[in-house]
Length: 154
Image (cartoon, rainbow, N blue to C red; front, side, top):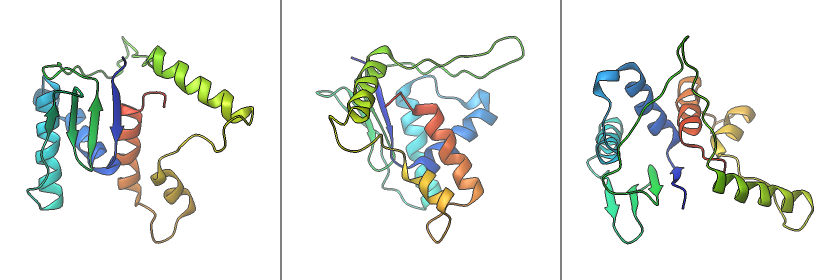
């Protein structure tokens, strides 16, 4: 079963990822440490102490409620980071199972066998439309970073 990653608070997750991108030496080596670091970052950013990374053994999932969840993942999974260089370009491919599931859904939408359309995270709509709910440019950038990093062809 493929790992599924769902970002709930795009701006917070993206800001944390930006911090990790700029500080390679401080990158957590495990998913547990990543989630704990993200929870601490979210607490500092929001001025609260409520955010906590939790692992649920029965569902094999890491969760920070309201921020990020990772499903079908081992408790002791390692974390690897990749960035492009002039010598190596990282081409991030979608998980084949998630791609097949998404392709089937797209075909069903296109053929009218299923009502609706693909879900697009709300921050895109808010930014493009503008107005009172629109994120600022920095928040939009952080949100896009989170979406790019964790989107899994869903």
